Structures are given as C-alpha cells and as structure tokens.
Length: 242
View 1 (tube, rainbow, N blue to C red):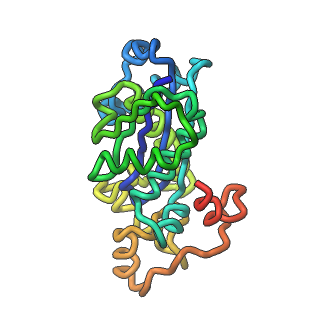
View 2 (cartoon, rainbow, N blue to C red):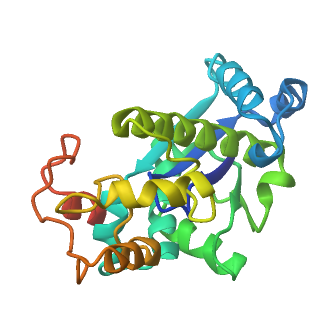
View 3 (cartoon, rainbow, N blue to C red):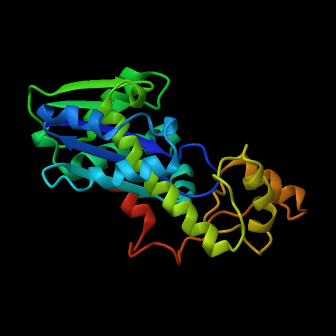
C-alpha cells in the first residue's frame, strides 16, 4: 500500500488544523490521475468536493482524517511547537489506517528540514515493514498524486468545518487566514464577548493584537475545563497520547 499524508489549516487564525492520510494499492495509482487529483490549492472548491466524494467510494482504500481544533491547538501550543504538533497528527493519521501494511509513505513536510520531519514522524508510527520507503518533501502535494489526494481530503474537511463555524457565528468569516479581508472583518465580532470565540486560535498574534486594540488588556489563557472537548475527558491527556 502506498500512503500519502498532508494537512490543511496550518496558518489560519480561525478553525482547526486537519491532517489526512490516504492509502491505496500502488497498482491503482493511475485511478487518482483519472479522477483529476491535483494539489488541492490548484482545484476549485466544487472540484475538490467532487474528487473527495469519489475517493471515498473505493472500499479497498484506507483513509484517516484527524481534526485538531483551535482549542486543542492553543492548549498544545502552551508547551509545544506547531511543527511538533503536526508530527504527532501525521503519525496518528498513519497509525489509524494501519502502518504495518505500508510499502511506500510520502509526507508533505511542514518542517524547514524535510528529512527531519520524516524522521520524527517515522519515530512515532507503529512497527512497519522493513521494506518501507519513506519520502518526506516540501510541496509533496504537487509532486505525488497520493499526497495530492490526501490534501483534497484534508482541505474539504476543513472547508466544511469553516462553513459550520460561519453558520454558527451568523456572519462571514472568510477562509480563516489572517490576510483574508473577510476574516479580518470577522475578528472584532469574534472577540466581542468576555472571552474570544472558541473557534479562534487564541495563541495567534492576530487575536492577541485585536484583543489589546479593543482595550481588553492581557489575553486570557484557555479555560482548563472545556465545553467543546467532543467527548474527551481531557484535551491535554488526549494530546499526550498521540
């Protein structure tokens, strides 16, 4: 089985970071080309959704989607780096589909040192075949169809979550990236309460700056008891287990 892993939402100030893995028989890699797979950033939202839906119809293909909320990111960032967080999430997405069946693993590296990222992820996955071929590259989603397909799964999942947050807020929030004008316009409304909105990344400088500019003083830490833990008794213990 050849497996690709990629993420969506590393930089945004709103919404989750999503990591997706996809594993398929190497003999079926041509199907991805037939489906029109490409780097998700090069495809329209409608095309991404169309391809994602087709990918999910193949019963012998394995995939995992790991969503790490804005709240979880903030809690983890209190004692970890974003690169280390991604290493854990990549490893979880791989382990979820069964690392022992992988013959070739391709990662879209987020670390400036792509080889180090690959080593760190490999160190966290469960025992694999000794013949496993590991490739860890920058921009792997534009070089390898399997990683492009994983990027589509991650991006569509995040897009759907951003749409859910928009509906919950009742106003436009844009893509969630700090440079997006709609996102910039949404930030003041999302910090208007006693605490920033739960789907904001409080640890981002964008939120801290907006909070201070609103005359609210020092940005608070996330509450230790969450109402948005999604069934987890403790976000911190869940993260440590990754």
